[in-house]
Amino acid sequence: MVTNVHHVGIAVKSLKQAYRFWRETLGLPLSREAEVAEQGVRAALLAAGTSEIELLEPLSPESPVGRFLAKRGEGLHHICFKTADVASDLAALRAKGVPLLDSVPRQGLAGLIGFLHPKACHGVLVELATPPADEGHTESPVRFKRLVIGSPVPDETAKTYQDLFGLPEVEVNGGPRTMLGWAGGATLLMVPSGEPGGMEGLVALSMVAPDLPPLVARLERAKASMLIGAAELTVEPASSHGVHLHISRYHFP
Ligand code: CMX
Image (cartoon, rainbow, N blue to C red; front, side, top):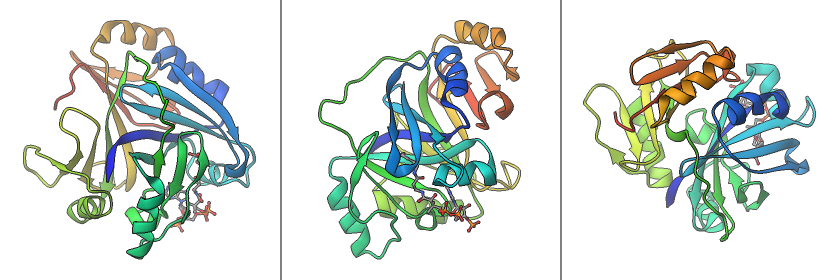
């Protein structure tokens, strides 16, 4: 039913501050920015390969993102899957008894959207979006690759995502992990929550930068805390608005 990861939402205190890292340092181009008053946010979509990163600044501490920041601080907030017909997908999920926050679609920054309740997806907030037909594609120097989800029961979690969204399984090298998504494209990796130190839900974002040296130079100029390897780097959450961020030259593994 879903055809790609449309975007990954990140809750931030201030869009202006977050732009310094996500736009200026990583180089992700701004697709659009707008206030979504009904959601209590000012949101910005930044191009990241065939998916996007959505930065969310709360308009008030009482809004859903304001409460999220107060409770958990800045960081990964939700995942949004692209679908051709959000209205019929929400109706099908409702008919299956899946807990929804929106039973009919409404207008969001990503197009027509609807949220499932986090309890539908093992504590992860999932959005479905049908973007406008004229949504363009902007090239970006760093691309979305994978989202890592920590779960005490990774197999069960993967099964839920397969059942609800029809996500195909991508083969990985054994172990207690399951990867779902599109071979060569966006994927979700379900790992036992013990691996990321007991963290459950959205725990890390993995991206690809085929031309790594200029990115490393920009990160160094921005004084980002990071570990640098030969073909990859890991940015500390303190430098990337609460996100455990891994960037590699290669799409695989
Ligand atoms: N991901 C996972 N769980 C979340 C969450 C998130 N982003 N936000 C809140 N929760 C969890 C809380 O941790 C809490 O869990 P526990 O009961 O285990 O402690 C539970 O949901 C209730 O949290 P709360 O702060 O007491 O309740 P809220 O009133 O904030 O309700 C939720 C939570 C998910 C229903 C609400 O945040 C919501 O409606 N979100 C959807 C809309 C949204 O996030 N809009 C912003 C995005 C805009 C856009 O993309 O257009």
